[in-house]
Length: 209
Image (cartoon, rainbow, N blue to C red; front, side, top):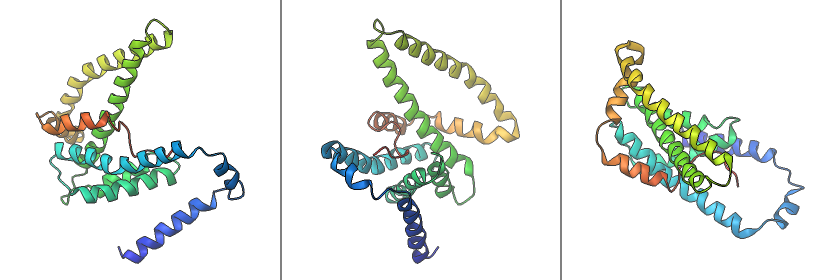
C-alpha cells in the first residue's frame, strides 16, 4: 500500500474523530482539568504501547511465531486507534490478527496468540480483584460473592479443559487442539507474559483519557 495513501486514510480518520469534538466547550473543560492526573494518564497510555507489544510478542512466541518488536509496536498503535475509532473494542484485535497471520496462511496461531494475551490479562485482573476481595471478606457480601464467582469459573475452566482437548479429533477443531498443545509446552515466555500482565493487565483498549 503506498505511503501517501496511508497518510490520507490516517488523516481522514483523524478528521472524522475531530468532527465529533465539541470545540466550543473544549476551553471550559480544559480550564477545569487537573493537569497532573492528565499527564499521568498520557504517560501510562504512552507506555502501554511498547509494553503491550512485548506481551503480544511473548504470546506469539508461545505459538512459534517471532516478529520484530518495532513491527509489533506499530501494529499495537494502529490497533489502539481502531479500538477508539470503531464502535466496538475488538476492531484492534482483528487488525492485530490480520497483521500477524503467518505467510503460510495459518490464521489459528495469530488468533490464538491474541486470545491468550487477553485471557492472561483478564485472569490477572480477576486475581487482583480476588486479592482485594479477600481483604474485604468480613466487610461486604459483594467481596464474598466475587470470590465465589471466581472460584466457580476456575473450576468450570478446569473441568472443560479435557473436553476441549478431545475436540482435536474433529477436523474443524483440530487447529484449536494444536494450539493448545503448543502453549502447553514449558516455556519461559509464560513467566514473562504473566509477570508483565501484572503491570499492564489489559492494555490496548479504548482510551479513558
